[in-house]
Length: 134
Image 1 (spheres, rainbow, N blue to C red):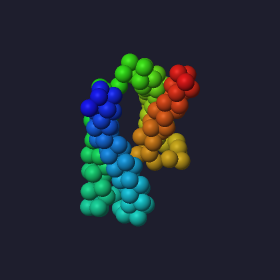
Image 2: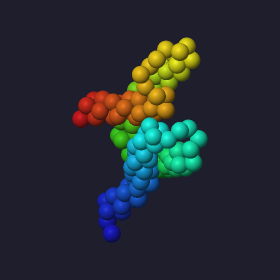
Image 3: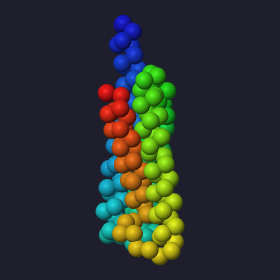
């Protein structure tokens, strides 16, 4: 086996937990949204799906950390730029949502959907990094 094949298979092995965790998280999130519209809080099905959702998200985070160890310097630089955009946007969004919700301001969104804002901010960072380093 040549070194490029070995490197490619190593990258795919590192990517698999992140992909499985991400796809599982997305699917369970959709199920969670459907259940919270139809079942009351504390329902055993909602609790089960919530637990699985948190576990899947943990798998995604662990897979992402593992994947980031396999990146070369250029890929790390792109990820750093994406995260340097996503982190402050997410921080301000979480800060704003929590304080305005605490003041009783109707936000038109469920605070449990805040991670979606964080993911969109990260995706915006990825697009900006891609544009900058193309």
